[in-house]
Structures are given as C-alpha cells and as structure tokens.
Length: 567
Image 1 (tube, rainbow, N blue to C red):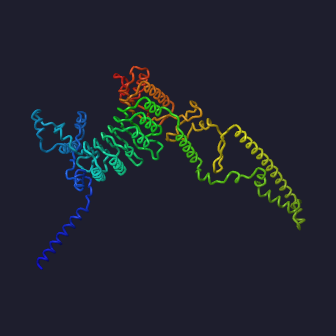
Image 2: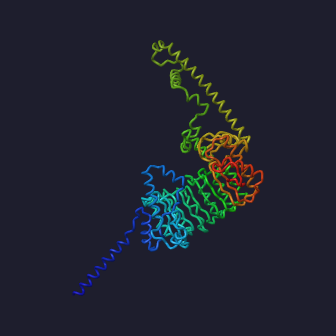
Image 3: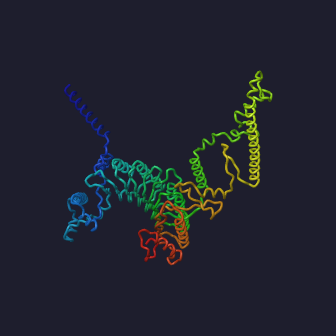
C-alpha cells in the first residue's frame, strides 16, 4: 500500500510539472520596446539559440566645425551631449581589447578613438546594427540594418514582432539577405502594419523569379524612399513597379525616391516607367544608372518630361474628370440627371403652351363668360350686374390684352422650336455628332476641335490629366505638358547615343520655355546625369543641354570642367 501511495505521489508531481511546462510554452513573450532584449527572447521562443548579435551602429566622428559649435553651447547642454556621446562610445567599443586591437595599439603607440579594429572574418558574421535617437532610452530605435545573412520567414516574423513596439523606427536596411518571393510578400505585409517606416533598402538580393518588388509600394504602403540596387531586376519587374507608380491609381503612390541602379532594365522597362511618369506627381528622384537603357527608352523618358499626346484611356479619364468637375459646379450628380424626366414631359408643346401658362384670372374669366353665354351676366341678377358693369368692362378689357400677349408668345415659341429643329436637321445632314444622354439632358453640338478648345481651359485642379491642352500645335488632339515634379534623373552608364541626347535637349528646352510662361506644380528637372554613355561630349546638342542644366543645378557650379552634365 505504501509503495502504491509513493507511486501515486510521483505521478501527481510529474503531471504538475508537465502542466507548468505547458503553461510556460503557451505563454508567448510580449515585446517591451527594448530591441536587444526582445530580439534575443523572441529568437529563443522560435528555437533559435544562437541569434545574430545586436550592436549599436558606429557613427562618424564630429567635424571640427561641430566641435567648435559645441564649445560655444551652454554648459548644461554640453554636459548632456558629452554624456550621451560617452554612453554611445561605450556601447560601440568592447570592454576587453582583442588581440588585433592590442597589436594596432602597439604599432600606433596610442588607442584609436575614431575607428575600431576587427578580424576580417568577423565582418562576415551575421549581425544586426541599430541606431538610437537617444542613447539613454533603448526604445528609441530609428534604424535597423541587417547584412550578409539569409533572411527567412521565421526570422522576418521575429523581426516584425520586435518592430511592433518601435514607434520611432523609420528606416530598414537589408543588404545581401537572399530574400525569396515569399519573404518579399511578407515584408510588404509588414510595411503595411508599420506606419512609421518611410525608407526601405533591399539591395544585392539576387534574382527573384516572380520579381514582386512592386508589392512593397502598394496603395496601403507608407514608403517614400525605396532602394533596389543590384537585384537583377528586368523589364518585367520594372513594368510592375510602374503600374504602382501610375497617377491614375486612387489613392496615388506616396513614393518620392526610387533607386533601380545596377539592374537589368532595358528599353521596355524604361518605357513603362516613362508611361508612369506621365501621370505621377509625387516621384522626385529616379535612378536608372548602370542599366541597359538605349535611345528608345531615353526618348520615352524625355517625352514624359516635356509634352505628350494622351492615349485613349487617358482621354476617357480626362473626360470623366471634367464631367465630375462640371457636376460639382452645378451641384448636380449623374444619378439626379438620369432620374429627371425628359424635356418633352416637363415642357408642353408650343401649341398648348399659351393655354396652360395663362393666369388663373384669365381662365376664370373665360369660364364665367362661357357660363353666361358671352354676356358676362349671371342668371337672376339683373340690377346688381348693371351697377357693376363699368368695373367688369375694365376687367374684361385687361383680360383680353393678356390673352393677346400670350397668343403672340405662343406663336413666337412655335417659330423658335421650328427653327431649332431645322438647325438640328441641317447639323445632322452635315455629319455633326449630335447625341443626347440617356436621361434626356441636352448636349452641346460641337466639332472635335471645339471640344478640344473647351477642354484647353480645364477647372483648377492638381490632377495631371487636367493640364492645359495645346490645341494650336495639334488641332483635334490632346497634347498636354509633361512631368514637372521630377527633379533628379540618373541615366549614367547606359547605352544612350547622340540621338538620345538630342531628344533630351529638345525636352529641356521646351520645359524651360513652358515654365517661363505658365505656373506649374513643381520645379522641373534640375539635375540630369548622363556620364558614362557612348555619345560625343563635343556635339552641339550636348553643349546646349549642358548649358541649360548647369544653370538649373542647385548644387553644381555654372562651369563644367569635367565635361559631365551633373557637375
């Protein structure tokens, strides 16, 4: 019996311990905002017992000018800054000196403070670098950098849980992480949840079969800066990105800077991006350097920055926007216009208009005359009617004058209706495009040229399709000015020849002439990088383009000694 009791106690103890372990397993770790501790604990929860270490990202030493400004600052402020700098330095430097550092100290004779010494293989190990806005507060992480290690879905989910409590995180950098299409899709979903992240750098990632980088800048993304260098992006990936950059989306893209340098983009991808720039009014910086863009892609980009003809889809969208603006001015909606009865049901025929529009006094007088047989007297009231005879005569005289005036108005309306009908018939005979809406509304009869002249003065709007149309240059077509928001375009180290330079010279000349006459939303192209392309730097087109761009470059000098447009 005693043995059975002992066995029962052991079983009960084992069951209690197993329940406690299950409770511990079921309890998931809740992030606190301290990235370093949260990352370690969440990696342990995901059964990753050797997670990459987390370091504070080293910063450049301050310049002598900044040191002089700090000496002139108040003592209290200087003491706080010195304390923060010392704490940051302590986090960067290890407590114990490595053998490599000791060897360097022996050679130099002092301990370096502006750099650290590490074994070259340590630089290849996976690690995470972070930036803190305030070194005193570990929850003020502003940037996260992960380099040289494969990023898989479990690790990305762990990072996403750490990012949930980082309200000041605005930059994420992934360098050579070999992210797959599934990881990129999960990263796009993560960016949708992180409202504070504005900058993403995913570089040296290698080729991805789906090339779904466009998911990173979807409608619900808050990114303003995207860097996709060294990712082997082809025309297919560039076309998908251009679809997300199109200004016809609602709401439009928020991206301000896009870097696609050092990829495999050719003329097809450049043409797709140029198509997006026709309607995009948020992108300021675009880099296509070190790609395979030739004259055809350069010409498409030049047209999007100067002027272009609207396509069928763009023309339909423009007409829809114009009709919406007209409805807002008149206060009528399409539903109300379609629900109204036709004009024939509201307005009576001309032959009956005079009778129906008469005043009540005229109709009552006529009925009274009809009942009395035309004498104006009622039966059984002889003397009283005789006494009121002068008043009735004056009243009947006024009624006759009113009826004559109404009759003349009816005849005039009949003539007007006949003349308008004849005009419509003659217009149809000449081939005029006369039509009416389904709701019975009247449509102005006009030729395509007159329609273009009417649309040349659209309502005040920032929409790119509602720009002023140049009908004098191309009658019957919608020729609109191009993109004036794009300020920096990098086309260096491509395959652009003298033909592409000529197109850009024409585009910049037109843009400058248009901006001198019309007020536009934007600064126009202020910097164009074309160095490293196989064109002659001594050509006349390049010289004119160089002079035009040097006067607009806010950073470069007016003189160009190296022969490049960007200097």
